Structures are given as C-alpha cells and as structure tokens.
Image (cartoon, rainbow, N blue to C red; front, side):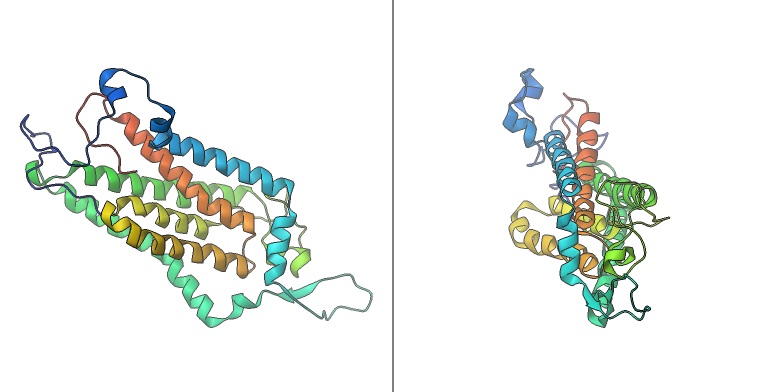
Length: 287
C-alpha cells in the first residue's frame, strides 16, 4: 500500500527542470489548455466520484427510510425467537441473535475491529519515514496519498460516524428494540427520534472502518489491484455482515456506514486535488 516514486525523480523543492517525470503523472488537456472537462473526465476525477458517491448515499438513505421493512426483514433473518418468562397475557417478544454468542465469530469481529487502526498506524509510519527524505529521495506523491488516507480515516470513521452520527441519531440497535427482545421502539433509518442515549445504531462505526479499508485499494500498485483488490473488498464486507448478524446494527446502518467512508475518502481526495496549483507540475492524487 505505497506509492512508488521512480529513482531520480525530483519531487521536492529542489527539483530541477530536467527531472524525470513520474510515469503516473497526468495532466488533463482541459487544465493545461483551458478547455472545460468532459463529463467522462469529471466523473473519473475525485470530484466526480465524490458527487456520485454522495448522491448514492442519500438515495440509499431515502430508500431505507421509505421501506423500513428492508431492515426488519434482514434483522429477523438472524433473530431466533424464544419463549418468554413473563406472566401469561403479557405482550412481549423474546429471543436472541445466536451468531453474536459464538466464540469464533466474536474473535473474528475483534480482529477486524482493530484492523483499520493497524492499517492507519502503518500509513502514519510510511508518511513519517517519507518526510525524513529530501531532494531526490523524497516522494511527494507518497506524502499526498498517505495524507489523503489518514485524513479520510480521521474525518470519516472517527469523527463523522463515531463522534457525531452515533451520538445524535438516537436510533436503538436491533437487540434493543421490542421487535427483537429489547424494550425500545423501532425507528427507521434517518429518524432521530429514538430512545437511544449514546453509541447508537445509525450508522455503524465498524462498517465505516471497513469501508475505509476498501478505499486503500487505490494505494496499491495498479498491476496488483486485480489480484489484491477483491480479497481486500471481501475482508471489508465481513465486519458489516457480522454486525448485522449479531443484532448490533440494521442493514441500513452497515450499508450506509461502509459507503460513508468511500464518500469521505473521495471528498478528501477532491480537496487535495483542488488545493494544488492548476498549472504546477504535481502528480495528482492516487484515486
């Protein structure tokens, strides 16, 4: 997960006019010649990807809010109803989510829980190590790519999801609702009138961290992406699946949580791209 800089490529402040250009450097004719970008160029850029992903996120939220049965059907598929010990005549649903009690799945969840943090620490190490270099050995593209990834990790899973949405959404988790053995009323996705006091169901922080892991595909060398990309995506989907099967989140929570990191990553990459002088010969963000 690192960006390569060809030996002899001067990307630092002391680069000369005869420096070797990095093979991945691309300068859109629209930028250098003043022509507007085509639709294809726009939607293949970080700004275009951000617009598409953001629109997709809000569209999915609207669908889950309009059709809450999607969440209920998915949660019910993992819920096993059991007899209640309440007095006769009491209206109550009892049961559990059995996957959440199996040791193998619990251990797997713990591993995947810390995996994004470990990956972020590795990127931080690569960034600090690269900043120790100067002149010909300094890789500006690596600095930018690591900075984009780390900024997206801080703004997405940590700040937006865990510190804001999960604290203000007030949506009870499946196992906390009266439909699945809890005591709170079910609330559809996007409805912030629930009885949860903190660390709520909307949206999934672990799914957001897993989505951020999937974004790291763009840091892989392009020849390795077809081989390593699918396994990385598969690993990133295990955590959301476990959270839904444990009764910790609804389908909408894990779907929107996973996708939120893609939105944030593309948005951060777009900001980094726009912050670069348009005519300065700098490599673009690796997205």
